[in-house]
Image 1: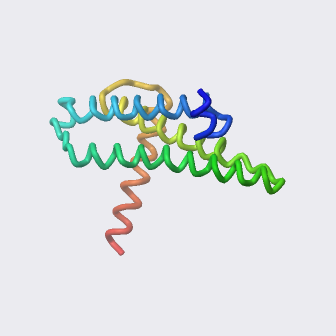
Image 2: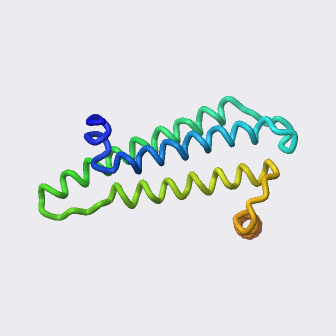
Length: 131
């Protein structure tokens, strides 16, 4: 526990939640890649790149914790770690929801909101290709 506090500052509970959402995202991503709906498009290289991104996120949280610790010594508490970790948790939770939606799980309004975002992304990508 002392190691968690040292590496990530005082927000060990938030870090545990981030790690939990990362594990859920990886698990649901693997489920999605092996599902019949996506026609078994599992690629180990894509999986490895994704895992490296997750590791990078945890490293970025550790760096933000160091910045927070330094800021306290200069008399200006910033709480960057809290907000940064919270943003990453939200991002991972949305990714889990997206994976579950692809698997056919109806998440009600969340599923509909994700569909709206997908349509906006497709429209934006099409617009960029036309330019």
